Length: 99
Image 1 (cartoon, helix red, strand yellow):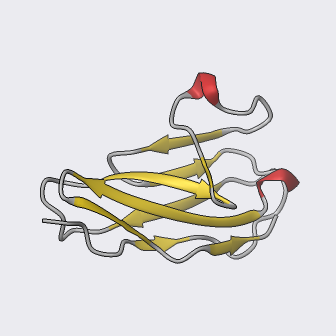
Image 2: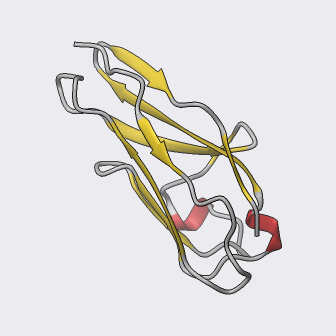
Image 3: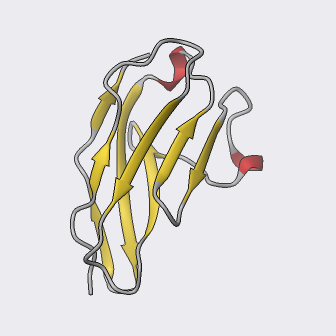
């Protein structure tokens, strides 16, 4: 079963240096969806070695949770998430996060 459009939760504004949690979830898809996050249409890597060195975040593809440990100005942007499984994928609306 193709995933439904996921529900994305993105904080509107986060003070510099604070942590921020972004959530993405859908429960119609079977098999269970995996999640990927995008900032300004660029994919955010779950692989810590591939990340930009100045970004400190943890991305869990199984739960759809993206956690910034200490946000900085460069994390400002439009975030969206894609839920994917064997049957297809679905994307939530982009949401702006201001740092």
